[in-house]
Image (cartoon, rainbow, N blue to C red; front, top):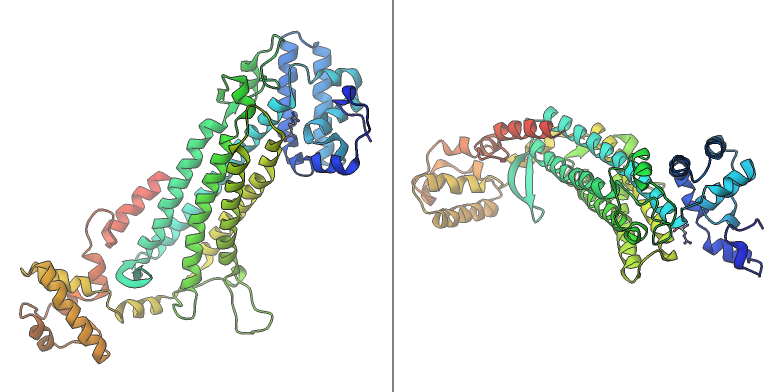
Amino acid sequence: MSKKAWGGRFQEESISWVEEFNASIHFDKVLIEEDINGSIAHANMLAAQNIISEDENSQIKSGLLSILDDYNNDKLTFSVSQEDIHMNVEAKLIEKIGAAGGKLHTARSRNDQVATDMHLYVKKEVKAVINSVELLQETIIGLAEKHLDIIMPGYTHLQRAQPILFSHHILTYFWMLERDKSRFNDSLKRIDVSPLGAGAISGTTFNIDRFQTKDELGFEGIYHNSMDAVSDRDYIVETLSNISLTMVHLSRLSEELIFWTTDEANFVTLSDAFTTGSSMMPQKKNPDMAELIRGKSGRTAGHLMSMLMLLKGLPLTYNKDMQEDKEGLFDSLTTIKGSLKIMNGMLGTLTINEEVLEEAVTEDFSNATELADYLVAKGIPFRDSHEIVGKLVLTCINNGIYLKDMSLNEFKAASDVIEEDIYDILSPKVVVNRRISYGSTGTESVKQQLEVAKNHL
Ligand code: ARG
């Protein structure tokens, strides 16, 4: 059992399985780089303020850097009895450089230290997530540009509604991701804030310079209240929430891919690399990656709930409950980065089954609104035209045909304003391209939309 940094007032030995329960080193070791950078900035400031000497500072710095080096070369071993990354690093430092190492924790507590590490870490990770979101957006734009002429059924209630451009459909996800990105970017203002120097709760009697450490660590802002600095976990809730919503978007897209790849729809085919087979049924090609993303979105929502529940009863300031803020967050970050990468790969390699889509939009009633609008243009009130077309659809269903298959006489029997030009109007391409309103699915509108989307990147 190694010596505890807080051992002075304790008389009994610790129990190893209690230490095991208390420890966070298994998961907070990923903070080592942030921990060491935070400590170096703190020591530099202590030296600049004449709280430690320059010589002590340089011993501390080289000691910390060699610890990081050992870690990167897999030469560092952590000890559970040193509880967490902060005390493991400090114990190693004292082991390496002796007395000067014991001065590093002057005017600092693990409470502001862990908060500093976490702010730095979350900032780095959120930026990486934003980057992956952007890569996926680029793939979506590429897909939309490449397939600008493909028409597919658009659905409401999962019933065929109106024909749309595939590009229009897929670009919807571009905009969802654009909002996700803007939420992550906005959250950076609240993540990028320095708690260092808040001490355990109330600040410190030493003449420290919190602005120096803030600047050296590259923080944009600073906590103005030491108690807020050590107890704030809002930025973690916010990050988990932003991750959860992005995962929900990826899950919706996954669900579409799963539907599109069924034998029943067969609209797209996923590349072999992003699917798996069955151990029993030789014919199977399962969309496992899409299903996993859909499944994992439940997990990230769970981590958000855990964090909210963790915080709701906590009095100010630090409580050990807060150690539980890490695993869920780390897991959510790993999950979202993985899911974004997989989704990007899946979209980048899928094949669109153009003939199937063409047949799907020709052999259905998704042009019925068009016929109703045609009658309206000829002066018939919309409610009447809706009724007329509804009856025509029913006749078609009873005869096993579609609107395009009706003779002009049959049309005229329903409404004598219908002329030969109706057959043109009913073709999916015309249906789509007659949509000219801003943001609509007409090819010209979608081209315009693509330009706006590209400007957002
Ligand atoms: N491992 C702890 C955590 O992650 C560090 C802070 C401990 N502070 C304390 N007062 N015990 O929350």
